[in-house]
Length: 283
Image 1 (cartoon, helix red, strand yellow):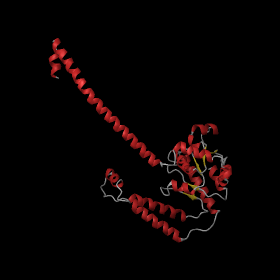
Image 2 (cartoon, rainbow, N blue to C red):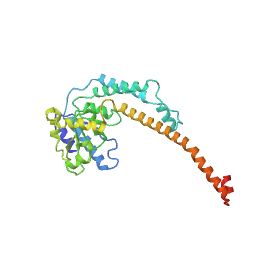
Image 3 (cartoon, rainbow, N blue to C red):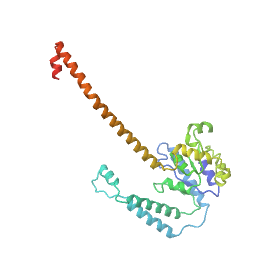
Image 4 (cartoon, rainbow, N blue to C red):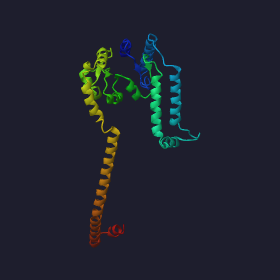
């Protein structure tokens, strides 16, 4: 709450607040804090003003939403079970994936165009996705989570709130993703310096650390991660095939010698006249 209050006090800041969808489900205190933050943002908006997009922007957003919903919705028969639903959802028709991507991009563009550029926003629900929020933001403020790793792709400034009770040195050492972050205290100390670094690149002393941490955590940008993952999978499959071939060769070589050893053992038992010889030989 202190961090949000400090951000709202700066007239040049536009806040995009996207709480985790499960906020308050584990600890009700977090849910109450979330409600207070939303109220603070709503109140701050009453003290701002400016032009709003016209009706055509809302109409375009509705049109894009209808198209996206049409492409991403699947009709099921009333008695369809979960397995049938998964099967139908997992089998896109033709170039549907490309069409969904295009429709998503169109909806995102229409969504941001429908909002006043001066107005703080509370963003909930599956749309817009957090990645398009990243594209709109000049700086991220987060807790320790995978959101930080994802945002590192942009190499833009980010900050992490230290609510752990650790010292800053302990906090950085304990959580690798905060290594290149501005650390904010629960009292919001550090917000002023963070905003200054965003507005003046010369004051951004962590740019090099972000670029280095990005490569360390996510790997190089080229080739893309999907290409590298696919190559790693193909390499693993090739190694598995080679291992199977070696095992098959080894078994082929070992079976005759094992059979000869067994036959020799049975012959020795027969010659010794052991009471169990007949039964063993039969088996």
